[in-house]
Amino acid sequence: MLKTELKRGVLFTVVTMILLGLGYHLFLWGLGRVLFPSKAEGSLIRRSDGTIVGSRLIAQKFTRDEYFHSRPSAVDYNAASTGGSNYGPSNPDHLKAVQERLEAEVKLNGVQPDQVPSEMVTASGAGLDPHIPPQAAEIQAARVARARNVPVEKVRALIQSHTEPPTFGFLGRARVNVLELNLGLDESLGAVASRSK
Image (cartoon, rainbow, N blue to C red; front, side, top):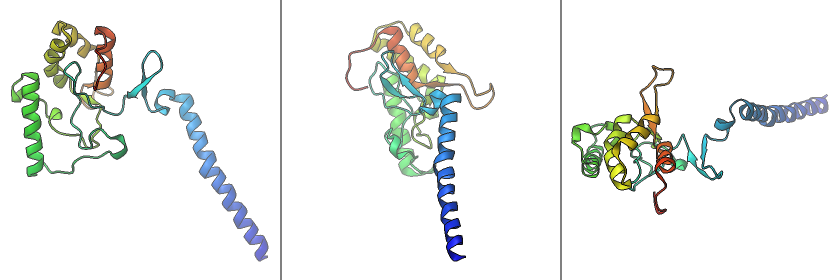
């Protein structure tokens, strides 16, 4: 009797492990690949030659004047260690970092401090937010146009065409995916000589 119960217990464990440890995951993976192929792959963005340049869900660091810059990251855009700084809004280190970022944005883009959206001086909770508000793209438009030697209207038109509305028309705010906008710049206005982004 003990032998039968032991055999039944081992069989139950093995079948459960196969069904729930392998079968369930394979089923969900397959379903995702069929119903949401792009999302199942990580929402990867590819160039026309198939080269992967990033994910539309993860921010990248852009520092060159020819490109729009992303929101600051508390983890230096490292997708392996997402997270915020965990500083409260009155923390002296946080306030110092915000002030330094504000001064840098004002100097870099030639705008007044009150024109800089808060998203450009504070990091998101995950540190990898790929979006900025349209206003944040707008304050960078003149710099990008100057660096690329094109009329600012062309750059503004690209911002407009890359602006996503709030989800379902009412959830959240309008936003611009920085990586997609920068790729749109290269496609529409020509890629700039390769060096660091």
